Length: 470
Ligand SMILES: [Cu+2]
Image (cartoon, rainbow, N blue to C red; front, side, top):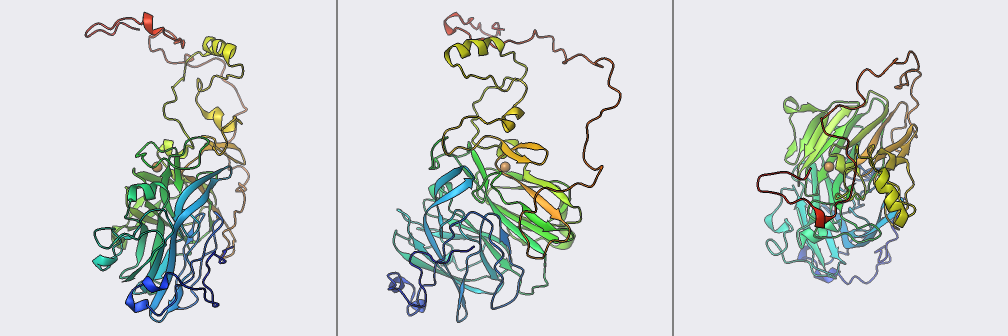
């Protein structure tokens, strides 16, 4: 549950407000709104509006929505940029930077036409600034440190004020030492609902950010200078099997929205359905222009929303289709051993390292079911078990769980799908093939390979234009 008892909670009792004197003239007399903190990485229930226009709130995978207060015409929010500890999946915690106790920060929800006032307090050891990605606003509220405002120094609070001109899907992130602060996990989702609650109404609306970290095995702090070779590909700073399932009532109209704040694109693929892309960075896609897909690529800095009617019950995989992005803590310099006879090498290595076990000569799937010794605070490369065995996945992978008869607000994990009898792929136990119909492996004309170490001193000399070393 939401833990509103934040340190420095500014309740009715009214603590001395060190930050109040530095806010803009318009809010000089007012107090800072409270800045609630979240201490858990589990999905919080949707936050229904208690005043103002009605809307169907979103749910944030492994996240929460930032409570706000109404102050006259203004909806007031309070973000605190600060160091946080985030559990990436059971068994691994990361020391990140985020907002209000978590990375990513809380989702901000508002309604088209709302006047929003967002207080940003900087508790980082360096300057920050917040950019409201995709929002149409006065230039001086755009949050680009140095360009549209002074950077927010440590210990200070700045105020952003703008009107949410259109509904849609937005993000927020720093624009001040941006590379480091995003690599450390600073970002959040910003959803603006249509003023008319019937417009584009869905029954369930899921949001998540795509982000990535490079955290060496056994350590806690991301390497901030990595550009592409990340080893933890996340949705909302979580990796499979730590990502919440998308729990859906059969028959619901469902929207899934995501934004990409990594440095590469992610083709997000959902099984069992085709869906329509209904929203992009620029806004809603008119109905006649919505295109059907089963995978939608989201480029760097982009947002996408797709919709479907959940008529097919089951446990449907949803994941990034880059297969390296559904792995955890993967070293990319691992050699390929498929088809290689490791017998002699293994025997030689076992002499010096008794526990040595050769891996990978028949693929890497076996790693999904094995308990390998790992450094502390490190996740296995592929993991997660379901009702039929190891799933052999990690990273950007979750499950859309469509079930009949759920309560409207029930987002609890319903367990694994009970398949109707006779609807699961099964083993053939009838007549067996009398003899192999084909050779054991296709013949490339090359003699079977055996892994052997080459003494570099005896390495054959390459002659110009010749490949004489095989
Ligand atoms: Cu990906």
